[in-house]
Length: 306
Image (cartoon, rainbow, N blue to C red; front, side):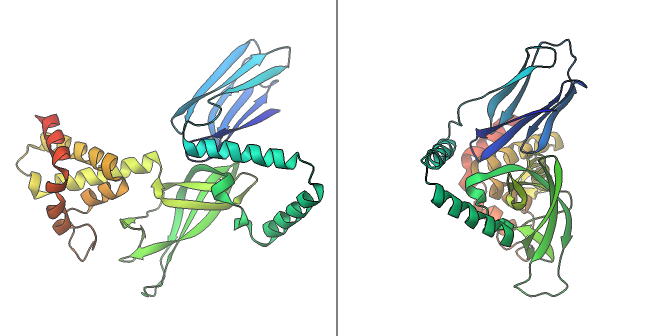
């Protein structure tokens, strides 16, 4: 099987792009951070094929060119690095590392490799994920809440994700509010099958960290719909017809997220909750916040449904 890898310096992190091609069977796999994007069969008669996908909002293309009977060339077409300053910094950092290694400091390099190896054996999380990790999506498989009710207790959230074609199982502690695992500071509950971004070491994915404050697109849609439903049940908007209220609340959820992020959706989600149910975002805080603090959003969404 022909395999070729590239690293794309994205807006958030480095991303591992791979193509795996079996010329005889024609099977093609295009993967991003270990997750399969394309799984197709390429006929022997096809001379050229391209696969397009977005990474951190930027278009990337893999092109396949047939040069002979079983000879293929693979090209990854993308910006040299993301237009973001983070992507540029990572590119420059990797270049400095390559120049350093090429400088001939053999003894120092051997010592460094020995030290890294020692750290790897003692603790997989010694990998500097912030500098060299890859992002993919993980989903929650199990949540354990301790029977005790101490303020120091933590929930244990187990999750899994795919990296380098293998399923990785991991766990991480999470905060507890009213006997449920939640995401600080907005206290949105973590539920079974919820999806979040996970950062992992490319050569040792068992070294990873899940970000409960960075939901996947599917999870974000779930938050959006829940916030919209809560908005529809608010008596502040009872004078609208059901159809207009649905459109108005959908607009509010979209604008709140664009302006305030996840916290904006939390404000909508808990707008009907009591102070005891949610100390940060509740019916009282919402009435003081809306519409005074969001006059433009209110006017915009009302114009949408007119």
